Length: 139
Image 1 (cartoon, rainbow, N blue to C red):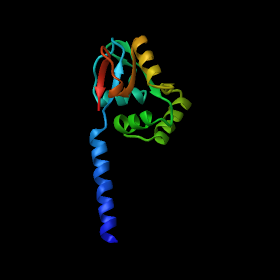
Image 2 (cartoon, rainbow, N blue to C red):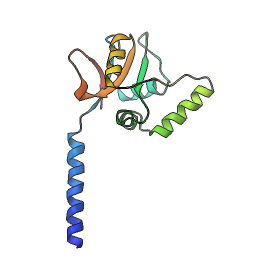
Image 3 (cartoon, rainbow, N blue to C red):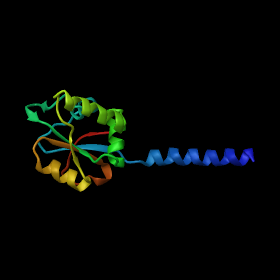
Image 4 (tube, rainbow, N blue to C red):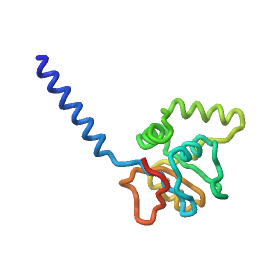
């Protein structure tokens, strides 16, 4: 019985590793006027600590709370979970230090908003990329 359980655990572990290896990257896209940037700058923007880059007012947008895309972005780019991120913005808003990024319903809305709004940035799965999109960061 122990051999069967060990075998099943091994199969599950290998499956998890393979699925993670095949997962696509998360990319941050920007309007055509937004320059490329590193992960640290993305984090500062989404935490409200940087709002201007090279004279361009940066406008971050986010996926709705509870979506896998948002959870993945928070984990990969901000090293936070939803509770910590929401708590952070609750305090910042209360003390008058800004408002959290606008939340959009889906990837299509995010792409349309970013492409039509100067200074806007958002995040999508790399499988959603289309020709001509300005990828400013990926992870």
